[in-house]
Amino acid sequence: MDNVPTDGIGGEDWGRLHVTRACCGAGVCRNFAPELLGEVAPAHWGAMDGDVKHRGPAVLEGTYDEGSFTGVLRQPRSQADLEAARTAVAACPVHALRLKPPAVRPRPGALGAPFSTWPRRIEEDVWALGHPSSDNVGATAYFIERPGGNVLVDLPKPNEAIFRFLEEHGGVRWIFITHGDNTAHHAEFAARFPGCRRILGFADVSASGGPYSAITTDVEIQLPDRPGPMTLEGAPLADAELAGAELAVLSQPGHTAGSMCLLYRGRFLFTGDHLAYSRRLGRMVAFRLQCWGDWERQIHSVRRLAVLAEAGRLRFAWLLPSHGEWHRFEGDGGAPATAAELRRALAWMERQAPGNMPLARFIPWVQSRTQPRGRLARAMRAIGGEGPGSEAWVLPRAVRPYLPDYRPEKVAPALIRASVVATSALGAAASAVWLAARAAGAILKRRA
View 1 (cartoon, rainbow, N blue to C red):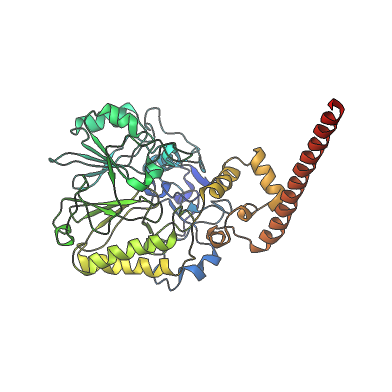
View 2: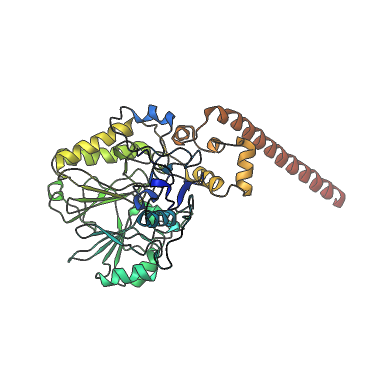
């Protein structure tokens, strides 16, 4: 870590970043300001990490609230840093990242809108679009510009700047939605680009929508879960064809039942929320806390990728997730290197607890952190107590250790209080039913 003053070199103030407890682990802000923001590393995570030979830079103490997943590596030192900080703040879907303005404001007009310099080319003809949508929990969207038809991977926030960029670069032929969490705005983009075809895993198609998903029954291409690769249209590809395919879909259930990855030219793997990169660990990881489907099934999916790489069929140099950090691996991204990276990820995944995270329990946990003065948050604190770890009791036992502020000593008393509250509520309800039945019986008796 750079041992520099937290307010910049020589005391020059270009603003100060701070991460609040509203942070829920999406990690998208770190892609927009990678030199300024990094992952928090609580001591109790060491047992879950295993033998870590490489760790990323450490975040500065005092730059994040206890319980946050992200902290500050260093404070802004220049106008470019300030611009990156402003973009990262705008990218956070839960408004957990705060920026204190610099003491001396830049001249008027020196700073544009937070995403005025986006989209940005990642490499070759692949772009990161910026403009993440809070309706997709800040998911990063990408754009593949190619003569055979352009591909939009997941969906940014609809606005004229994005629409104009896509139109100037040839429009959109396919909208590839990696999984059901990232479906917001699909209808708006389909309407703006008539004739484009939307693609989604069949198991993630929803007829009713939900807190993190839209109605998607009208999606044109609904892909099955199959062990082998597919084309964008769903036609099977032989494993031997994968290495030479320009575009190939790989079904990877686990995070959700219909999660899909998209491989482009054996160089770019778009993973949705299936796999991301951790600079803290120096390897690929999956989101154990935010695994809505089944962790063991997700491990099986990654194992399928490793087998393909070991057979020389799968390779990639870029890992491009919708949440978490993107990463370019060193070297040429050949199949042996890809297999080694996947095996390292598997070794980490296999050490983690099995099971899943029910959304019905995750959503109240998020709401209690993002709306700390709300009625739900006050009720949860009444049960869980004040301070760090007060909301952990609402989550399943297997995932509680993945919270940065996990306090096991707080959980047992909270569960006892929750049981007392539930028992009292059931007793009150039973008493109300009994009294209502007696009253109804008395009325009937008088009428008789």
